[in-house]
Amino acid sequence: MKPVSVAVLAALHALVAVDALAAPSCGEQVMSCTLRDGTKNLQVCLNGSDAVYRYGPPSGALELEITTPVRTVDYLPWPGIGRDIWETVTFANGAFRYEVMSGFSRPLGESDAAPSPTYGSIRITKEDAVIAELICDADSVEWGYGGGLFDAKTALGLCWEGHPIQAWEPCPNE
Image (cartoon, rainbow, N blue to C red; front, side, top):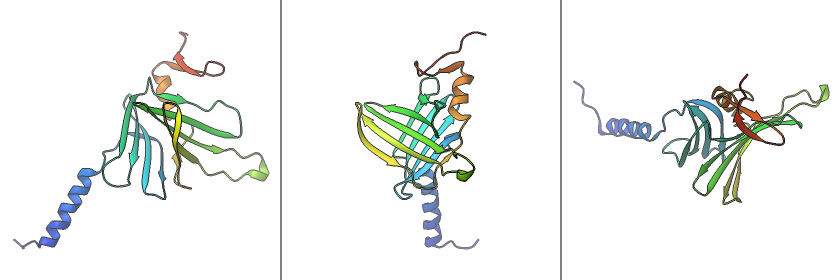
């Protein structure tokens, strides 16, 4: 058997330690981006019957993870008007609320045929006062309109009631 150097053992230990700190997959990704010049990651996903919010550095332990049942998570789909297509999902953690928004601008015509970049942000409030708003780094947003939380809510028998109600309600029996 070959002797193993102390440096090799230290490097292997460091790799194991990093893997132990890395968060496990949170399920089907709904939206993700980097913030603060890539020093933070934001991720919203579906994990079974839960919606999950994750925030923290690209490697190492998460700074915040909030898990909320899909049935009760505050999800606002695009209302169907305006040039921008967007949606928000808000996670509560005590007096704090973390509203994640993602969207893109639709082309107006042939002269504006190039697709616009997808954008996103987090608005953090405490008792209805905005305490921070973080904008996703340019070109880092991964979000696909359609499916995701909308499909997860409808699979639970919920229907979106738009204006003036603006709420998820049990679907009427057909």
